[in-house]
Image 1: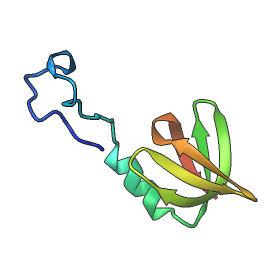
Image 2: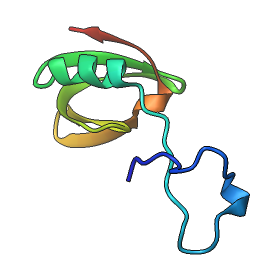
Image 3: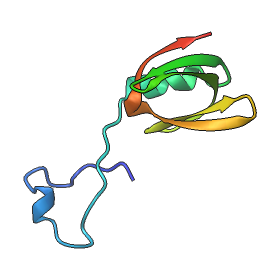
Image 4: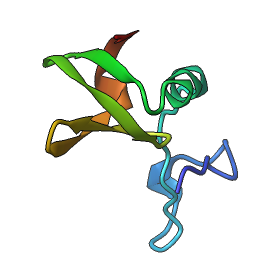
Amino acid sequence: MYQQWSNPQVSPAQVGPGEIKTVSSIDPYVVEALRKLTGRCVLLETTRGGIEGTIVDVKPDHVLLQLHSRQACVRIAEIVWTMPL
């Protein structure tokens, strides 16, 4: 799912149907830092405001937080900063 173009000389417009590959911006340092906080309560400041919860799981593009009786999926691209509580 997180693949780069196999030929950097070819733009997405030049790729035919069925040859499209998903390209996603991944920040491996942020992902690793969040993975180290799995199971801990954190405050995530996002572009839409703060959210506090316990990190349940971390994927390359999002983090899953437990908020009391609910869960929230937060896109890592929207996180401005994190703080363990």
